[in-house]
Image 1: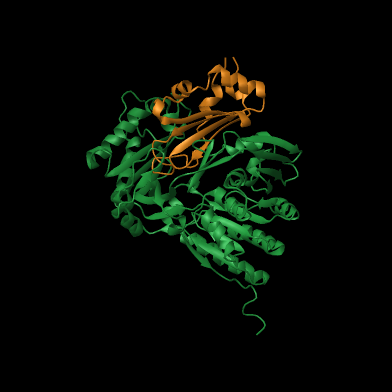
Image 2: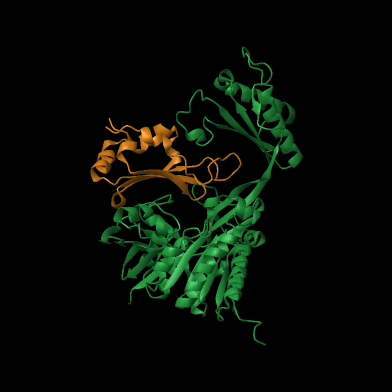
Length: 103
Length: 461
């Protein structure tokens, strides 16, 4: 089974405002995009299981056809840049997505 | 309506300097406006609360100089918003001062800048609250009350295109705006030229980060956007970059909570039906955005406050037995802090950032390694009183050294202190406001100052 790292061309995370982290998984290859989209590997439930978060922290999830992208947004536990925070830009949260297996 | 071309040389002006070559190439194609944003909430609450810029002034001057000289040479508006990283009044004044210095150095003929301020006084917001206004929480936050505002030291209102488009109408040739929606800076000249809010704001959304909308990945390179009717054609100006349907569409969703919607005061753009088509090697055309005006105008407020003084200590661990039981060691050290100061909570905050394990991802790390080769621990203590923050940091870090773990072989120190120092950091700050307030008119929250800068003043008497 290939991993998301092999199929996606971009896997990234970033702040969306001060209270959220947003994740983009973008595919150059149409077939790869459709395979991941249809596999369910990035369905909301799977994402919550991967990051071990309750469903209510996943505030948005969508498939954006024009960009061949799957997007989701997770609420931060505390706002960006607060004491206790270590990723001001939210730019290093995507690593666990690399090894997601795509049926 | 004639096509209207905007040049955007940089996303977050001066965070690092813009690249001049592609900007000059763009200006050779005679854009009608030069637009860039210079700040956002992305950099954390510290710059806003401390009211300081994080971009270096030498870089701010570099970028403003290159843009101003071209804008004046072409005789087109230059629009810069969220001045000096935060968009506070200080930021606007600092940028105006830089324009004066640049104009004098280059002996520029007189021109008329407008300074648009959107910083809010806490007392004014308390007044509005007392008169029954609602300061509505965004992104799951509760509404703000008086205590939220009292914890807040500095607030900026995020303006839409209205104040920015008004300034040139009053004769301004350069606009330096306080905090503004990035896309509003681009929308302003387009609305002024008669284009629809849908294409005006959508063009801003696509162009705001300059060359990020193109491929391969490059920052700080210029792009041009040519708006015609209800579509915009975006072109890469760097010789090695292309704007493709994929690069443009994927930028459209960048940094958005909901990637298909962009909210501004007074409405939102729906991007769910947008389409992207290749025009040529360098450019892509985008269309299909829909603007939905909202029945009321809600303006976003960003506010930051101080939590307390902050001290850090850096500690390393190499003993595999200690690494395997680092949670026990931390629990021991925390226990010593609790003995002295009681449980963590309102009085103090204490964090152990375990680099090599889960410091970056924290609770979102699904699978931190049980044992790394080395472990770097940053101990972070926050208390209102600097001396107490220092004592908490000392107890919390040095007790890792004295941690009592049964069965360990090393018995003269369970951790390596990088130094005996307790590092003094800037205070801990927090985003206290991520809210909206309803207004009759956006102009209630902004002040416009019309200025004249004469680079030849004081000469030839």
